[in-house]
Image (cartoon, rainbow, N blue to C red; front, side, top):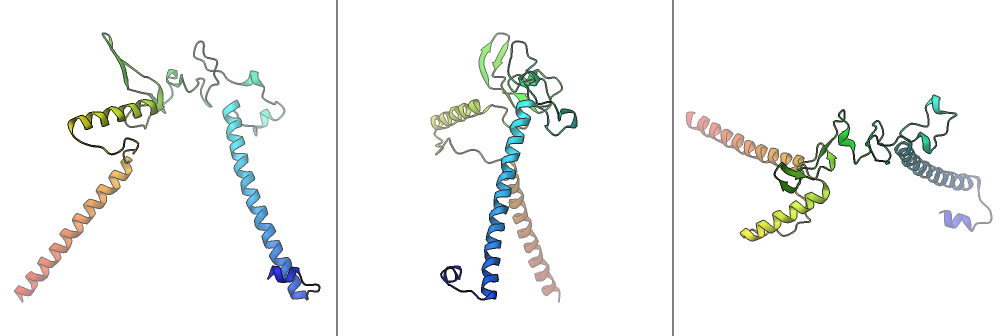
Length: 200
């Protein structure tokens, strides 16, 4: 309709209003899309700002002071000049030196066996990671496992396929139990119906 109206030399009042209403809707949709794009950009920039300076630009105490490079908190580990992570005095590499932190744990991959005990990787990983391996050593362990399984005769098609997440396994197990219970309930109902028919 907009194409036919665009070539018309004269428009009636309803046609003009309809065309303006259509254009207004289209323009408001463009502005709405632009608004949300700008909001996403603002979130990203705010995240970068927090990461760089470790403080919010909206605090009243910081309104007049623009953070400089000297305001950046450096890692408290001796000899390290990296930026500290927000809300701590250590960088990501040395976060395990912070006795108060609870989010990270060391990678348990054994690099070397020594008389004093095994020497592990020790790179910080999230505390919820299972198994307790960093990405590099997880891939290495997966390759070792696949190689060993192939030697024993079990053929695994691909090492790039990740093992299913724990919650997926739990959901599948629950589904299996529910199916089993439904079969048992149906079996019990049919037995009761058959027993009622023989009694009567």
